[in-house]
Every structure is written in structure tokens, then in C-alpha cells.
Image (tube, rainbow, N blue to C red; front, side, top):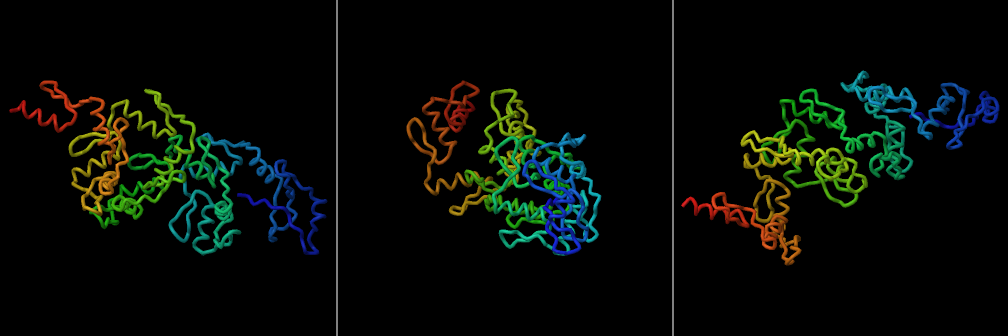
Length: 403
């Protein structure tokens, strides 16, 4: 980002005074902020003063007007300057032409390489004006200072969420649009961010050096191991800023928070009247109408709508029950099953019947109970058409037919 500052007064006799500089080189005036700038290079390169031209003023004013003259021909994205567009193109095409001579890291542009090299020499010249933290670049310190000021200038075009950087805004908006520009070269699976792609690509590696201390599972990265361990510990570190609901993944939390911030539900189902905040929700919902269950078990050929349901089902075949009760040592396949089980120990019965006010520990027991009031008997005998309220009753009845 261009650092545009007003020309300071010179103390040296050889240099122009501030007043003479104003007379000889008229200042350009920003029409939005009434901020003034030098139009000519009145100071030498070896001074600590910033030289700014009328070209810089034009670029600066574009920020206020919202004018975006340059447009990317590939991705149809508008930009304020041609240099910004060039930098974006290299980022999107993943060309990393600039390599660090000290390590194996490569970058899409020269600026990123120079910024990276500061990490090697340990230089952090830019200090926060609010706390003692220091940073390698001026842009980093400005982003950090927004934590203190609470400034979030980048607003999501779909919901009310605001962000400190345009990068975070772009990544967030992909939740709404469903855009996944980063594809795996091996299996073509798409991802919203390059770091998510890099984590995924580790799956295709044969080596899995990171082993779980709770079970026999091993992983390609420490990150994946840490995420897996949360299954055993029940830890959910990512909390919703509105309702404090906790999630294992930050991505799950981000998608959930849209429910609080977004009033609009632009993604409508083509089969029914239901609408959704993001395209991923719509895709999952439409599978219900199509009747397709794309996730098939390799052992018993049972198929599921969601991959998470298949993973939970796989645990049945493996005999794995990683979630253990700390009171009675009973173990469960999922953390949600364990949570429901704990309600029995605590004596909590939060689910009340609206007809007779009887309360239950779990939702499914309440549903079964409601059949009494509704006189529903969903389990029918295939031989004599006799109906029953519970599957166990049907099993006993069918044995009578068999003799």
C-alpha cells in the first residue's frame, strides 16, 4: 500500500523551506478528504521524506470514489490500478516466480518475497502505537492496530459481517457464493483457500508420521492430528461470537455465524420453497429431493447423503467407540451420543411433551412417546398388516407367524 504523507518542513539551509515548496510546487488536493500532496519530486531520494506525484493522488482518490478502471479478463474482477490487477492474476494462477535464497519458499510477487526476507533477519521495525508488539511491515502493523481501534472497513456484500482485511472478506464471501478456486492436482477436489488445499494434498502422501495417542490412527500433518484428537477429548475451541455455540473447526463456526448476520437467504431450492444463506447448504438440502446418496460404505454397500454420516457409520464396522463416559465408562461412536448419555447421569430431561407435559432426556424418546397421543403405529407386519408402535413389538409378533 502506498504511504502518502504530507511533505515535512526542511531544517537544512540547502533545502527548500516548506513555504517555498508550496509556492514553487503547488499541492494537489484530495476532493474527498481535503488532504494535500506534493506534485513534484522536490526532495532527493536519500532523504527520509516521501515523494508523491499527481499519479499517486489519482490512485488515492479512486479509493474514495470506488472507481475501478482495470478489469481482470479471466476472473472479471475490477481493480483500482493495473499493478493491483497484475498482483491478483499471479495470486489466482498460483505462479510463484520469486524464490527466497535462504529457504525453499517461493512467492507470487516481489513485495511478498521482500516481506518474507525480513522474517529471516529478525527485523521488525514497525511498532504498534497501542501495545509493545512489532511487525515486519507497515501494512501488518496497521492491520494489527485495527484490533485496538475495532475498525473493520471491509463489509461482506451478502451479509452484515465486516473484516479488517480485503483478503478475509474475499475468503468469507466464498461461503455465500460457493466458489472454490483451488483444485487438487491428484483428485480434483476443490477448496476455498490455498492453505486448505495444501492440507488436503498431504492425504495423497504415503507417509503418516503423526500418530494418535488414543487410537491407532496416523496422519500426514500435525494439524490433522490435533483436529482428530478433539474427537477423543470433545474439545471445540471455535465459539460463535453471538450465541457462544462451539465448533471443532473454524470453517463450521464461520458458516454457522451467517445465520446470525444474514437476513437474506438468496439460495432457493428448485423443488420446494426452502431458501438458504449459502450455496453449500442448498446443495446438501437438494440431495434429499433427488434421493441420491453419493457416499457409499465399502464394506456393506450402505449409502449416505453426507460424508460425515458415512464416517460415523464406518466406526460401527471397525468397532470403534472413542467417546467414553467418565462416570460409568460406557463408550459411544460420536460425541453427540456421549452428550445425550450424560443427561441420564445428571437427571436432566429438557424435552417436554406438549400434550401431557411428560419430560424426556432425549429428543428421540419424546418422538416415540408422541406416537401414543397421535395413535401412530408406523411398524406394519408384512404378513397380516397389523401395525405396532415400536419395532420390538413388531419383531415379537412376526415370530408368531414363523411358529
